Length: 476
Image 1 (cartoon, rainbow, N blue to C red):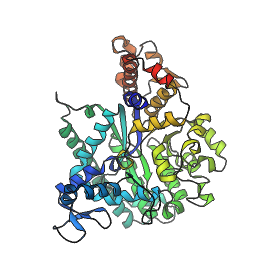
Image 2: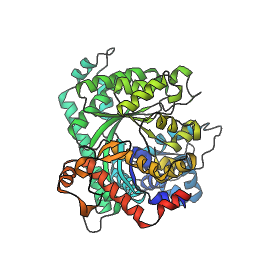
Image 3: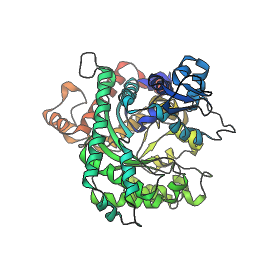
Image 4: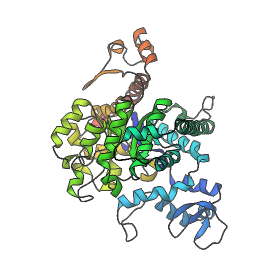
């Protein structure tokens, strides 16, 4: 009953979702077979090259697709399905991050439209209104640029000046064209704009440019600089993130430096939104001092408006002050329960979800990531209901919070959020389309974020009127 209820429950947004990780392994294997790619059965990995049949443990992906036992083994390798620690893979952490290089070769640019179509189709089925997907079009150009232009100390201004305007423009053009092709492919596959349009066409999508934190400083800065430029140039990109294992040797060594890079770039353009992976760490994964300040640095130095994960908050130095500052500045935390359990072993009351709520820090649920984790946002809502004593109205506010702290442009529908109260123009509209006052209609027309929030409220009204679901959830 809880699963049925939460599946139909309207969900505002999934704000922490890497597009490459949102794809199910079965589809990646199918694309590899279509492209004639090789699969290394020894290492359970898709390879980027073509190969002939019968080369030992290197076989055509079509052969894998044709044999259910081999395909099952590959799906397990390319996701968290059926994972159990072993001598080969000792932890969920290693399995999760190890899947990406094993499946990435099957995701050539010719399949990006299908990837986006899969993401929005699942979101629509899951009653999720909005996706903010992490993607990195033409990131190779930024990596090469960083390799050619070394960073001297922390002279970020000199590095910024060293980048050729023509080279930067070429990156912007290529990144926008890749995104155009991806969206066009999705529209074609889902028949968007036609009478046969699939439900996924109705899901709003924006992008965060995902930079990689495990490379040399000059390469990381080049990525961050390019990401800022793309956000300025293309309104589909609404913010910047930094990804890859936070406990990686380079990521730990250069963490403070990376935060100062963001600080410098935000000084040049403070309008660029940041949602940063920070505190995706747990006791024992790194030395104690590694848990002391990553979230605080992301908030105070980099200026992040959202934190992805934030799992190690209880171990940060002066955590109470950081929590108070996050509450005062309305810095939201993206809560990824299944990911935090599988990667870090943090679950239940060991998770800081209730710590953030008690401090008044806004939180919302997200997936990180559907395909690798083999879950959806419904799963995260069900898991929360089974873990913490949350009421229906608290779940409703958690759903609203996702959209409220999205980086969609425009003003919010909400004048306040604790409790949620609409702006004056829409205060008497009753969230019903036939009762929208002229002032509210004008406000919605001018603000895309408010439009998305209004639609969510309409969905809540329909959901609550469809059956006596409030009573069902209260009894549960």
